[in-house]
Image (cartoon, rainbow, N blue to C red; front, side, top):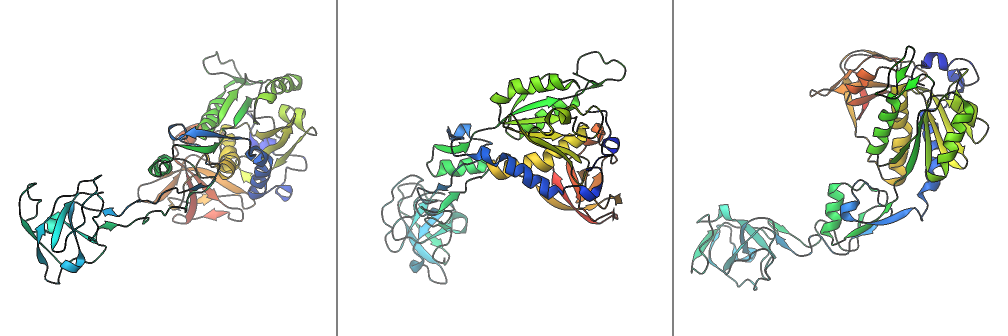
Length: 420
């Protein structure tokens, strides 16, 4: 729930201390194991290329043709035989031009054929001289009887050979590849019109808390607006998930149980925010603990309290209620696992950057801080450590990672940064 600070929720119980905390890597592996069955063979579909943007490829794709499928010109110029080109260059008779898409006649000895970019190299030619290197440096008018002087040129110059990009029979794309514009363009260039992709997962998103009200409603004293629902739904949709959002669940266990149970048969994954720590009103924990789910503390700040398991046989993940904590949980655990298992979303770009100022971190935890990567390659912290600082999150373009075992980093020290 949004109002409960992690500092209080993390206290007490066997998961409160760092001695029993689970590592980030171990919890991510547990999330992978939980969701891996959703990658079953039957959970794929065939889509036309125009509908496959943003999906993950479910099968290897083998190139049915070579790219390029024929030797062609890399430049507008003259197709020549390098054997006709002595060291000092040569005056050659101009042959019939070769436009793109045409089947040219074989090149006769002592001739040069004007050729367009992408056009088929004539038989007998093995090089192309750019038109700007010719004398005169232009193509003659069609049908005229003319000559052109060209400099010496080695075989293969400005010729795109068959299969120089990709040979027929080679693997064009591996299963699990994220299908962006470049990947779809490659498939189209191979003559492929549809691909097998993983089905998009449907996620039930439940926000809990008596203190939470929806935006647009009156805000009584002691209440807060539901930022988590919009925050996490947006992140999930951006990651290619279909999201089913429920009404806000109160802190009454029987209500939450009925709410989730009514939706569980229709979804692939259940994600809750709030109610996973050690407090007296942790409703998600009350409903699920001991009934298919466990609740633990991960050695991470923010986002230490986590829930994982199943509810009525459906995979379940419980994220903390503070807004930054729930988004960091998504970025650290759910998003990379979806990328690794299903190829969608693409992994977050990771770069190395130098801190613009000192950073202090708890040595026993993996700390994730909000930051802004600057044009000069430095990264500046945005806001403090607290997990409720939404304005600082909205002003950030990166997550700064400080691994376990590091307590102080000086200005200029290098850190790993995930671009948002």
